[in-house]
Length: 324
Image 1 (cartoon, rainbow, N blue to C red):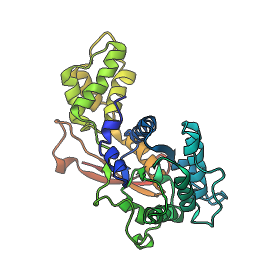
Image 2 (image 1 turned 120 degrees about the vertical axis):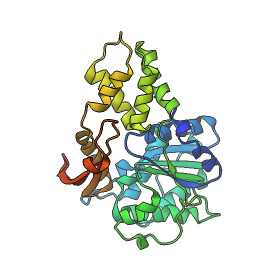
Image 3 (image 1 turned 45 degrees about the horizontal axis):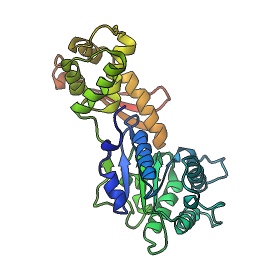
């Protein structure tokens, strides 16, 4: 695993500047690992009361009685206890009573009022919350952000697959439903978790060498980077194809030819549809588009190989498949 914090280098500066911001990136790109590492670093330094939560547990269904704001507060309390925050920094127990659609606002304000350290809240999997519940969470965070001098968390990061500007439409299709300025507007910039650089791909594959003695040659690493463009899921998928499927003996180096075979070998459509299913389920969408771009030097001309078809994913989503 690569050091996670350097992949979100602006985050610490934004926290120190009391910003509310967004970190976005595809699934299996290292978002959660980076957030958890950042939370641990902040907590160990002792300047902030930093808590990481996953909003996945706050994703409610119609038959569930507890709304998302209640489940978020419950998750905050549990994670603050589990990660060893000092007793004086823990959230109030119980959270203050409040009317619906204000519980998160009142709860975070009460916590900030009693906590001697500035609170940093990192909220992962924000995409798990949908519709009116998501609108309510964002509105309460915005209201708390604008409530100075009323105490409220020092900095909040939302982490998911979307830019926050897309959440308005995703919450019901009408961007006007979430009116007013967003607390996550940091000069119209949200952070996208960076893809791996060539040096990071080499470092990641070098960890396999350190663990097993099996070397990736320089040309193999170069081909992997060229084929994947540093997208973390693809970088790992190529290595997994060679090590687990092609089963190159540990006594042999992994060469450019091996990597070429891994790039050419699998049809990525099946894996792509499985990954797209995860996105569509998380974002509560019924239709998606999968684009498979053939970067192989031997591929036919773009006009000859481009095709569009309608397919059904393994989980039953309608998908427009574009081969280019």
